[in-house]
Image (cartoon, rainbow, N blue to C red; front, side, top):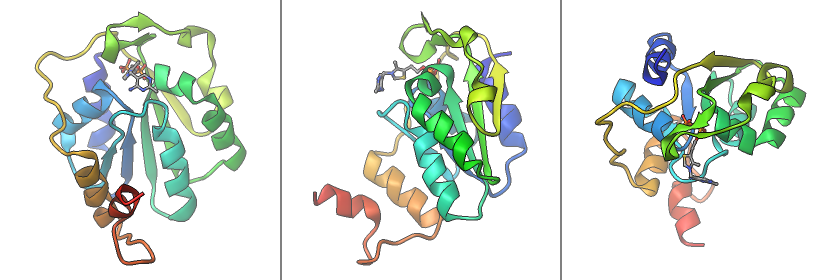
Length: 171
Ligand SMILES: Cc1ncc(C[n+]2csc(CCOP(=O)(O)OP(=O)(O)O)c2C)c(N)n1
């Protein structure tokens, strides 16, 4: 199965879940499949989709879906075992495992020797083909727009009444 097809199948089941997508083509393919304000595209920081998903799932009853790559999951093994420890019932962690860092040119990962489902919590590994879909555009939102859109979608303001993205840019 192509990775984008796995994303299509996952998103076909989504109603009001918050979806946190990992860095690279997984985010970009999600954007093409079904862009929505409740999607957060983690542009730039590989390995951070699960920690963000964990934080969200800890502080809301809403269901949270993390769309991860095998390379990103391997980069964040501490989050994987923390997720197992926390065992949050509202978190589902998909790992789209193509055995490579496809977004940067299909360099191999060591995912085949790792049992992600045993290490993490509510992990669903989907084996997908390596490679990227042709012609997938870049996500047009800059990081601040991305964050503000998402925070608005989840109804969150910081205690000072500013969106969190504004606050972090002030240092
Ligand atoms: C900390 C960090 N390291 C490296 C990169 C460069 N990078 C972006 S996406 C990517 C590959 C992601 O691989 P994987 O998570 O397996 O997803 P795939 O692209 O295979 O679907 C890499 C190495 C980055 N953005 N951040």
